[in-house]
Image: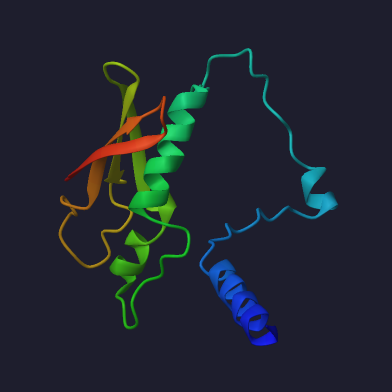
Length: 141
């Protein structure tokens, strides 16, 4: 009986190792935070508004396209390392029919152009069902 409980406990603990934990945001020290001046959001200059469903669709697609725990392979070139960084991509969102949101990831212009020709085929377009929070299809660039 004790062996069965021990085995069950080991299986339960090993299953926990499969759960992904997202990194926690890092906050600036209070003295640095005190120097930040917030803009007036009632001015249209430079302001961008994303709907909740658009933001959730972007997050769902990005978590599939470039998961948090993805790392460059050993010996990766600076260009390859750049392509593993989420901030290297621009995101375009377009509403589709019947609760579908299209999310496109493209490499930002001249961000990863370290010693090489422009990158044309790194990216993808996702079709996301925002009612069921389901990736319907992926179209590679």
